Amino acid sequence: MARVSTYLNFMGQAEEALGFYASVFGTELAALERFADMPADPSAPPLSAVEQQLILHAELPILAGHVLMATDMLESMGHAVRIGNNVTINLEPDSRAEADRLFSALSKGSSEAMGMMEMFWGAYWGTCLDRYGIRWMVNAAS
Image (tube, rainbow, N blue to C red; front, side, top):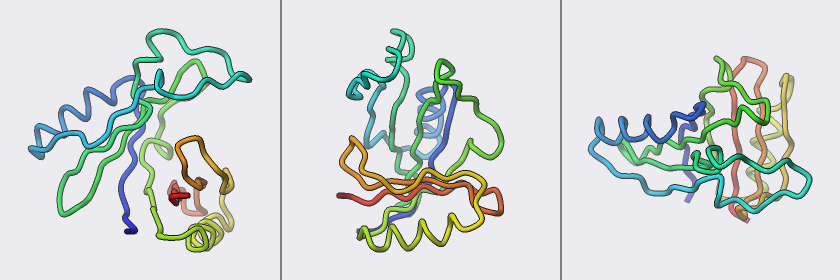
């Protein structure tokens, strides 16, 4: 079933922030993966022990079926949280065709885009910063 969620980026504070939001909404994490759970990429430098314990992906249901998702960005990879990349609207359409349609429309005139591709978590995924400065992620189950 298609859904829309909000994806939040942090610099090492994702777990703390999600704990806070869980207490506010009275809910519990529905998913939690750490960078240590990610398959190693032989072309990338290894992550430090501290970075391996950071949040790769987490999901927290809040209200009316809406889900907050979160990740920690990695300083060692040159990541930095700033207005414009701290919040992303995550779209999960029911089909690859709809994923391609949404991505194509949203990325027209975008200043940044990472086209649709197969990802290690078993999804067809892409992201863009649209012409209005809003970041979108399209994530379709493969």
